[in-house]
Length: 294
Image 1 (cartoon, rainbow, N blue to C red):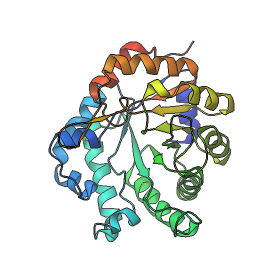
Image 2 (cartoon, one colour):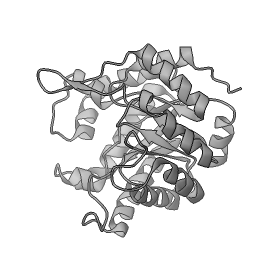
Image 3 (spheres, helix red, strand yellow):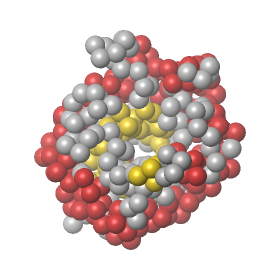
């Protein structure tokens, strides 16, 4: 998909993203402290069924589970040389699940290492990591790219520049922010909109961290700066811990959809869910939010 085609598709309407992957796989038995992407490739039927459920619930865009399949993250599991194998395999698996008519996004995220001066990671090293993954994802046949759950504006800028250097696909950039809109390691949601849209992002927004009930002022500030569609993909509220220390998200699909409708009215254009959401949350969004904007 060309960036111009994405812009035309998003004009005047709401696009529905998918919901959580990791929290649902955990419920399905995925162990902790593993290479998630390798586990997914070995248990592809579970992921494909979840992706089909999101598709049937009304998602316009499904994320391929390539989230942390970058060289730095894979190095922690002794799999640094499997970037191509994992990204190619996970895209192929996802395409078989959703078919040719649903948009498939190649998913990238933070490496978990901080850029200088906050950490030891040099900008060019990080850029090469993202160039490698974005290039493989484009070759694998995704329709667009997503850089999500990013920790700072600077880190997201590196990822976006790298992706645009190696392909012509649309790129959606979403940062994880606190309730006041500040990114965890530098910058704000509204700064991200101003900077990233000028660099060529097709959509900018926020995901993870907080629930939709906490994001209305953030979305309102982003909208004032936005020239591109805004993406909002929050958690299902604030989690509480169960007896085993696992996060439990208590917001219902209906509550989630009600809050998301207000965010759409405030300016959100692409909507979905992150941690704690399920296909029923996407179905609730479809029931609550009109596809066409007034």
